[in-house]
Length: 434
Ligand SMILES: NC(=O)c1ccc[n+]([C@@H]2O[C@H](COP(=O)([O-])OP(=O)(O)OC[C@H]3O[C@@H](n4cnc5c(N)ncnc54)[C@H](O)[C@@H]3O)[C@@H](O)[C@H]2O)c1
Image 1 (cartoon, rainbow, N blue to C red):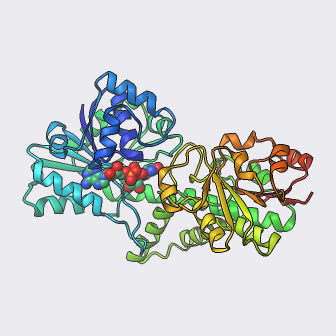
Image 2: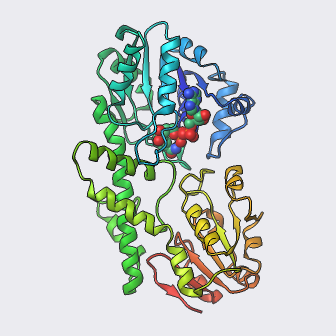
Image 3: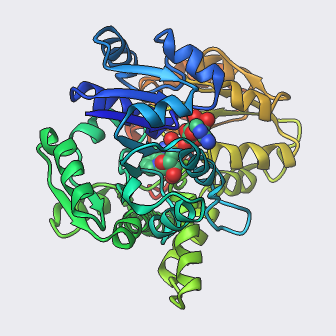
């Protein structure tokens, strides 16, 4: 099928390549000229496992083209995916500016029937809103159908999630659009759930709200473990053995971040407010998370009282491993607190991005984890990159001025920490004093 994907960020680019791999002809459009220039040359603009390989394959096999020309994108395909950003506004509402821009462009260039598919996570009622917007611009209903097809992929595992998704959700109100979408997804051989557009839009928020709640729940259990001498990892393991619960999203740590959970939980509360539903569970999930992400600072100040002038190493800047995305990363909140407390920050991330250097030009970015430990008084681990679990703790200790680890992701084995005789705090696993 001929598909255009508008917006080639974390979702749009993966979806565009995914549909290319599934033997469709895809045009990937973005208004960012630099991104398109780079993608045309086969150079990935984000870090995601498998991206180089799929990008190369789709370009070589002529399954995908990249363009800034939205008119061409709209005219040359019969299915138009919208995958632009929908960040949170300061008041928690969804910022629909980018979606509206795209609809405006579609209204200018649409010349025959198209299925317009919304993949972005959008305010409830967006499907109807887009219809009204196009009608108001003089485009009659026979030129389009609007479908809601939320995306559930996780950064770091994006391709695997895209191809092996547990479910495909199609919110539709036209049989023709339903049939076209069914045909598009047929060779995925995955469960397709057809429903109305409002339900599809809400499914995405319900899903993210529930997963975020699992994380905040286990984090509160972890905090209690730290008080009573319990071990949250044993608790997570046992909970996960219960098929009604599932073991996923039960790792205690310094909370969730990223471009989805924080904004989607806020949006759910706002949606609830609009329709008179309190969403107290989600409000608490957000509240617990806001406190959880700065727990390392609490532990640090508890240990030292004053950290001004001390070198503090921050390891892992992305909101999770396997990505270069720093949006709402706990590390950002931790660095802010360290700067406020006049500590000297040295950091390391295997995927350190230009973006974070722009936000914090004053901090030191090291090329290896060991460089961050030199003369440091504490190493705070914020992201569970694989390479961190392989660090030599004796070498780490030798380089540090005062050996203290605050392990925000429960990366290290207690036995190894004890052997190295390092002061160590984790999340929900008590602490070790050498
Ligand atoms: N990132 C995730 O893990 C994830 C997972 C599921 C759903 N989502 C949702 O998917 C949507 C996209 O998220 P993302 O992380 O890919 O965002 P992103 O910011 O990485 O990408 C958005 C892209 O859209 C482009 N864009 C903006 N306005 C445009 C326009 N008018 N014309 C053409 N291009 C335009 C931007 O230049 C950017 O490249 C959001 O609604 C998000 O909530 C994200």
